[in-house]
Length: 423
Image (cartoon, rainbow, N blue to C red):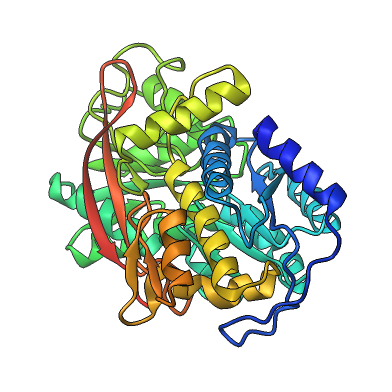
């Protein structure tokens, strides 16, 4: 899914331009040194359990590339987007095939995946190809510093885990139960929430790390899981899953669980359930999503882009800002390094995020290019609100949004908390 105008320009340029002249990275990286048009692949969920996250992420990258090209492109060439489907962790063949296709089309950068499990399935292949991968949504701590060619614009689960654990404790819950999918993302987030709960004097009475109570991906029968969890008489329940959450909630309803003020979701399932459950089912349920609530004008621009491309509006905006910032950082890194190869982008991405001392704050691609051309170091402060990338290529600081469900079972943003990232 790319804008027709961008696709047409990219194809036209590819048809008439010959191989660009070599250019050396200003950061001293080992890049190939090419000024060919920057080609960005996307590995985002168009199908599978996380498909609801696809639209805002696709829109984020698409809008960013439009803004980049409107400002003159990268090294005087328009940026091209090559879209692909990441699928989800339940069918890893989708992402394997997509990455093979993207690498075959000579992309220099891949934005995605949404699922940490999917990224762990493909990141080694992407790294070996000398391509940089930037995820707008991966939160697994396993990925911190995993590869010098992997970065992300979403914080690791240490930040969200602290926020969600503190939220449960602040609400007065000292005995909590966890319903956790068997998946690197879900178990990692559970582990970090558990640390926060126990550090605050709370106890995990069901679903703790090492208990072996995780359920399989795509699980649909939760009768025994819910019965076992409720038998421990928890004050509150947190669910770490994706699409499986709907079946778990349905079973909690069947077993007469009181949801309001006692049930917690996280970014993988803090979604709009207005079409899934009876009115009022989730009223008072709380959840978290990494990222600050995006400005309204940015949301309008994202939605307008998506409507133009797909004739439908965005249902939510989760990870749209992070996707936008990922594309801008990739483009600015190529400008700073004076080359569009993956290694050069990787060598420069921390610098343009603000890791260098005395960097000039910029908030748009156009401002960043102007400052770089003036000889300044830059600190791109994007719409996601993350701090400069640290040595692990994680955001050094990030916001976590707190949401509460209304009577229509829609997640409504209430406030934001900020956390720092070690590393």
